[in-house]
Amino acid sequence: MKPINVGLLGIGTVGGGTFNVLKRNEEEITRRAGRPIRITTVADKNLEHARKVTGGAVKVTDDAFAVVADPEIDIVVELIGGYGVARELVLKAIENGKHVVTANKALLAVHGNEIFAAAQKKGVMVAFEAAVAGGIPIIKALREGLTANRIQWLAGIINGTTNFILSEMRDKGLPFADVLKEAQALGYAESDPTFDIEGVDAAHKATIMSAIAFGIPMQFDKAHVEGITKLESADITYAEQLGYRIKLLGIARRRDNGVELRVHPTLIPAKRLIANVEGAMNAVLVQGDAVGATLYYGKGAGAEPTASAVIADLVDITRLHTADPEHRVPHLAFQPDQVQDIAVLPIDEVITSYYLRMRVEDKPGVLADITRILADSDISIDAMIQKEPGEGEAQTDIIMLTHQTVEKNANAAIARIEALPVVCGKVTRLRLENLQ
Image (cartoon, rainbow, N blue to C red; front, side, top):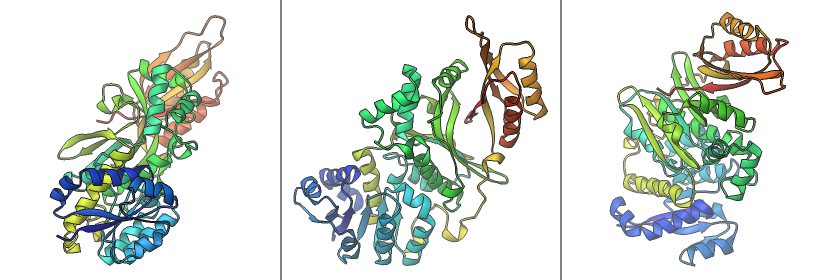
């Protein structure tokens, strides 16, 4: 059969991996797809690099818009990244009747509703397995493998940089700033790691997964986002003593009155499998009403793991290239007219448990004052550590784990605790999820 012609926009780490894997496994991929898939044109601003990677085997240009306008191109693979020119290119490709594969989670989380509506109108496909968790096929699992289930919640370690940092902080007892420098030296963190360490990257991915899991529009602007920059080594140590590990989780949970969509450092019981995902690895835990809990684990970034997902999308589109658009798998799992505009709950309405660390004066009655305030807010204590003060010290730490409560109740109680004259400074508060 006539080969499928692919225009590749961007041949950096992932683009280069895609080109190499597609070439190396060409015969196997053709057997699966039913026809050859060939990258015929590459667009990249660095022409010398593009020619080096491709070995002169394909056409190379610095004009990405010429690629999306080329009538010979069937599928456009967008690996440029960002919100700006990538959006223009993707929308132009759709307008020109081309299918699109992208690994751009930021683009989809912010502009996905517009992009999917345009693709639906034009009858083309937008595939994005590589946008979430690299080589882990979590999009296909949510959209197809778990289609019989009412998804109740999902929780994911979906940023390898922050997971590496937290693993190193726990293993070596080092502060955040020191481990970040190590991560940058090893190539796990960018020179500007803001999107990773502040939780933005994970929030992009959680937004995409929540839309597929619950049949709702992309609502990145409604996500609650916290990073790991303020996390202290002491809290990682105390969590360990209480039988927990701290991970940056992207969480989406269905509630009767809406959907929770949040990213933040989270205590997880150490006995849970996901709590033992270390280094730069990713994992997503999904709870369905029929199947129960399923865990998806693997490399969340890198040239060839992400290329694996990009090429899987190319194969899917090739198989369905001539299919009636009405019979294709919907972009967000649910039929477009069945996507529901369910509210994303503000963080004040979230229900979860809490880890509280308080630096207090070592005086009689302090613990009684704190527990009384928690009781007044209907917050019950699940576990507690009261440290003995060091020799010659007049202050000590009290660490508490609470049962579930509404966030606004926890905030009100914390404000009252911080106002006590025997409490020294701010209360450290982290959320806790049992994930069961």
